[in-house]
Length: 432
Image (cartoon, rainbow, N blue to C red; front, side):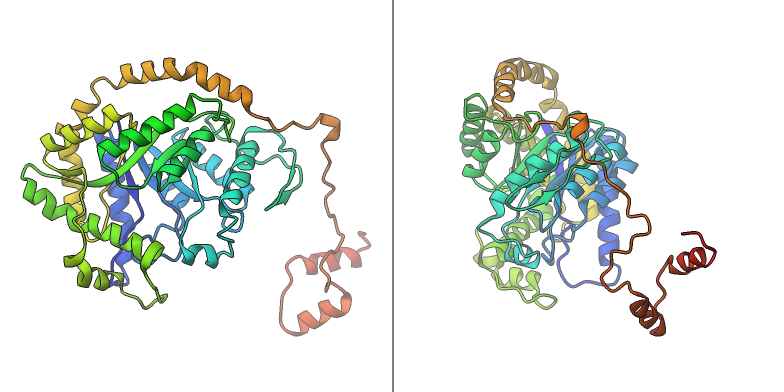
């Protein structure tokens, strides 16, 4: 079994001028420790405007810093918000490829579309179209990373001409592709598209077995048609995290933060009404705490308890458990202590036969993966003589207001237009 950490970069109020800086630096130090201790992946979600719940609006920057400080741990961009109003597909291809280059082939490419009104309406994404946008944009982003040149596309939600999208990633044809899944139906969507399932719903091992069973049944069926250029058959599930030899102390250190994680998620996605820059989510959480159901984190407890619970996930077919450790007001010191204890007493037990499990799984799935790739309708590359050349603008002025009169008016207003003085000097010298 593999183990990951996830960073929403939660920051409950009140905030000081140093709060976000300290939060980010502590998180990077935790990733360094996780790399040293043998954790497999650090995941960082892209979110916008979700105060207190997620301050990680540029995870590619956070993950690049994490990659520079580590040697082995994978850096998972989970998720890239894929509808084009958030991120044009070419920009996603460029930044995922660059993250893969910076990390020397350690990038994982998670995708999704969000379900929060703050994000969707903030970027003018039509909620009714977001899933169609995700599918169209993600497929074309994969094509951009895998094809030279990309042939161009005219779709329902974005279009672009033929271009060679660079750089290309280290991992070929592209980094492993994942989909954020909040329910069982989205797990099915991930399997039908041949992508990994990042299950950010909190389910017990018995329910996890049903989700994993559904996922791998579809992967092995004719319903699996890869969205990308490869099949990433993996399922990961998230849970709370706090480890201590004293169960009560593990709960004291971790349960409150995990409970806030769920409350803040519900506030922004389900039942809350949020006034930007004003609403105090932590205060609302504290008022509601006694009425909330207990947050059951299967990664919260003693080492022996975690071995028992996580082995159940392993037996259920879950490939990776992702720990929600940076949540609420969980402290940096407690997070580091939990990581170290887990690595010393839990991880060795559950990783003992990882290589053998990986080999059996790869052998079992190989014929199904090959069949799925044969079902895919591949984008046709352009013949060399059909690639349209791009003529440089040269000195052609394309701005609608770039006339001598408009230029003089702008300069009269004290606006300096870069390059125009040089152009005038060239014309005066007869260099036309």
